[in-house]
Image 1 (tube, rainbow, N blue to C red):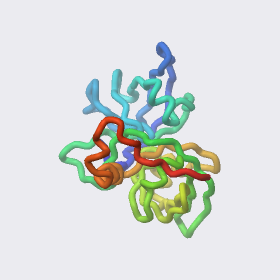
Image 2: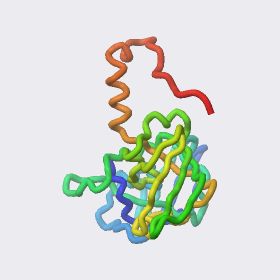
Image 3: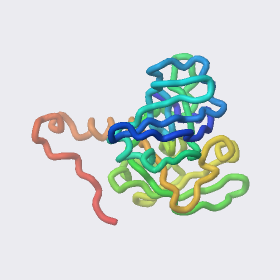
Image 4: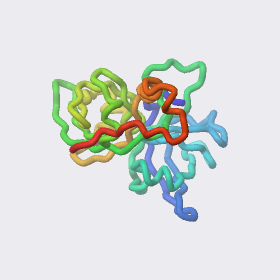
Length: 213
């Protein structure tokens, strides 16, 4: 479990193919690894990964075929910059929102323009995720907890303040940048509850997915 408050920006130091999947080595940047233990979770661009090796500056994690297929991790190369956050503990302030580290889909940056000292971004989400994105609701973009400013179908807008631009990888986003998205977990559970007990029976029809362009 995470908060979506990015603690450091690291970068991919090595990619090692392992029997069809991948082991990543991440340079941790300013992320303090002194208290890390084998098996701990670290969110890397919003993907919850398990630490399998580490030293004072780097950690390694295995990335499954499933994760490679449904996140941006499959396109990372040596030098790719990544947002990092260690798992939430009971002593942490919940400064963002509840983030699981389970990416729901990959979105795309459409536009970017200045707005005083902030930057406004317009992104497109996969169509199946559009129903979970609400104006003034929360969304996680590459592991960063953000507030949605406006929604238009599967497209949504974000206003990014200078601190976030300087301390996450969002400052480097351009048209066409692909990003990991995780929708608010509360929206998912609420949808399930609204469908009622019938949804739990074997053979029940799936919850409809929006259609159209």
